Image (cartoon, rainbow, N blue to C red; front, side, top):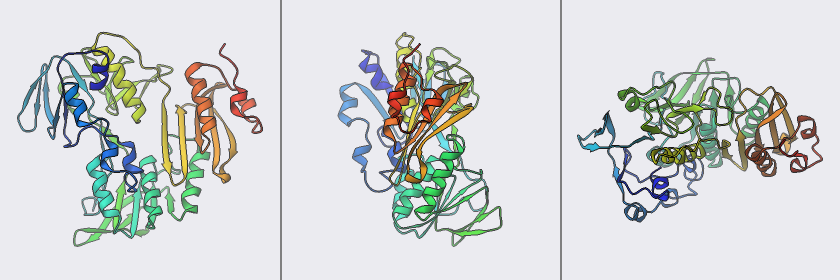
Amino acid sequence: MAASLREAGDEEPITLVGAEPHPPYQRPPLSKAFLAGKADLASLAFRTEAFYAEQKIDLVLGEQVVRLAPGLATTHSGRSLPFDRLALTVGARPRRLGVPGADLDGVHYLRDLDDALRLRGRLGAARHVVVVGGGFIGLEAAAVARSAGKSVTVVEAADRLIPRSVAPVVSEFYRRAHQRRGSDVRLGVGVTALTGEHGQVRAVELSDGTRVPADLVLAGVGIVPRTELAEQLGLHCAGGIVVDEFARTSEPDVVAAGDCTVAPHPRTRDGLVRLESVQNAIGQAKVAAATLLGRREPYSAVPWFWSDQYDLKLQIAGLSGGHDEHVLRGDPEAEKFSVLYYRGGSLIAVDAVNSTADYLTVRKVLDRGGEISPEQARDNEVPLKRLVSPPA
């Protein structure tokens, strides 16, 4: 957001405050290339240190804002930071395991750079890795661990993987894909306790009575938006800081962006959704910057997301929630296919596995208009881009 303000010609003072000691960095590689040792610290940086100096953006690192009052922020060290404009981009924290033994050494979460550094440092010596949670973060980390030759068990309390984000056919594909590569995937079971010796985790006890050996546990069981500061200001929060399409909170002079927010559906404006993706964080931040400059530019971008697991690239465009029909193109057994989602006969989203052409076609349709009927989409012999009808 700070960079967007400067790009738009804003010359007012900007102070960027962060609890972490690191300058702003990319988070998506943390569970992928960085965890696998294929990316270094330098490659994660959003900008060079010189950029912030040149743009007159004052970085305040290692300082957590703990109190907010109108016009004044106070950090944990007692530092006072007066302001006349406020943007909350405070993100979310990982949801913690609430079972006995959750505080044992060897139990990890993966949300920030320090988490990734600790996990990467412990992964080399680990033999038995248990991943609690079958969402994207958990599955990406499981793929890294298995590729490194570790014994990997994935435990998911729901009856399928990635249940909130994809259709059952995609969930089943990822279950089979991880099992083919040697991971043990257990569905419909919860964790009841973690046990250990001398303070180190040694096993995970499950609700079905089984016990899985573990010297490293990664918990990926969701996130909790950081709303504490917003609540101090009396802002409306409901599973996140509530913002409108202009990234305005219930106090119009305060904006918010990223995982800490819930906002109207970017396409339909129905309900409130939280989009946990770097694309949304960047796009929403640009809208928030425009709002701070007195411009009204509603956020309406097509949501997109990706996940790398082994040699499988999942690309998602649109939001499939509320779909009443889906069409499978390609062959999951060949590990190259796509699933198109429809509501009321209209295309609303796609999940594409190693099928970038289908992903790009649907994303273009959602962004620019047009349609692909479900009847036509079922014809696997015709490239999807040839089935697009022009906008009405």
